[in-house]
Length: 471
Image 1 (cartoon, rainbow, N blue to C red):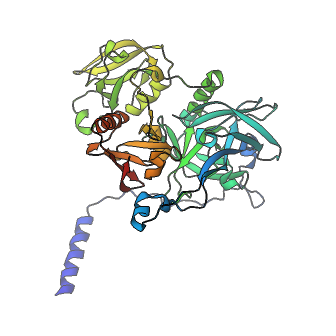
Image 2 (image 1 turned 90 degrees about the horizontal axis):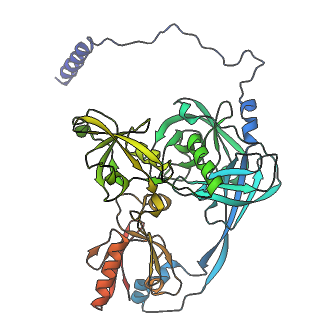
Image 3 (image 1 turned 120 degrees about the horizontal axis):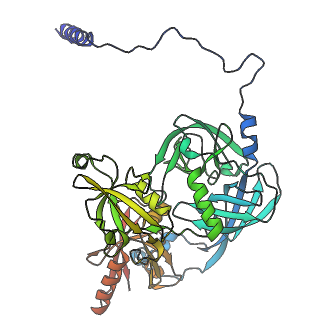
């Protein structure tokens, strides 16, 4: 009986499939050897030889304060209370920390572009060429944490400057090479293809427009070059997505066109001043696309009072579709366009409202000098706190679903240190109040002090929730 049933099912399936017309590939094809003959070797050596001369090793050092000789568990007040003993912890000592990365020479007189996180807080920067052991001391010219780019310079001349490719012309499937110093083994080259373009919302930087590649990028490759098969720079290798820390074939590079823009500004001014219009924006959902004629753009969800967008008459629900002559594809596109423009620049905004396209003009203000950007640091009781901005989340690998404020510093021998707080803890609640910002924390701190209450501060430490008492 079971055999008959099985046969019936197979027969029915076969009959249903008989009506499908498959698009078969040509079966009459040839296989060829990429080499011309048995005495030819396929190689990209000559293509990347020049580019390799433009990539450098970067070694940095900085001083860290560390406790000596004590397990951090023994510093936990709960641990001490549970086992019924207290003891004085050893003092901190200074320890020199070194790290390795890569960079790319962009001018003959020694300007080098690298990742911001490669040279962040560095007290000393040493640069060496991939094919030369001579060391050069470098200094930081300017940095931009929001794009994870920095410019350093060495006092020497006649370097081989990289040739910049146009990253807007790159296509998925193009062959690329990652050149850098992975794991500190020295100059190394890995091959792959461009796996994706215009990647954003990765959570690495505040301004993202990554080139994705499967060329192997490992620790130490950061700041190195991603070049095409001609040896032209397409991007600066920045990060990988990996659970283990090793290469999984998902690497990201900052596109060369963005690198060129940022580098020019950093060399000229030492910093990046970005335009600001004062709106909150989002992408169109599928349901929202049914309401708007334009299916692409950045949807305004809020307009800040007395900021440029408000003064120009923009409102919640307007869909921004163009800035000057540049089309706006989505919210990230608008953020990157506005962020690339200087304060005080006058721009024309094209938007859709109630099915009609309109234009307005406005003058950008400085993002860093507007009251819309609140102070991000607060210190009290030995704690230095920061709001969870996009760049803070990216740097500390904090998921977007975790709300609160992060502990950036803990002063030695302070009330906070004695209570067991650690750098990287995320404060999520104080007493009965949920904490989403520094303002929430300050308000609850004042209320508790007025009532002469001790503070029960709840923290998220790498996914573990703990309640610490701050006296």
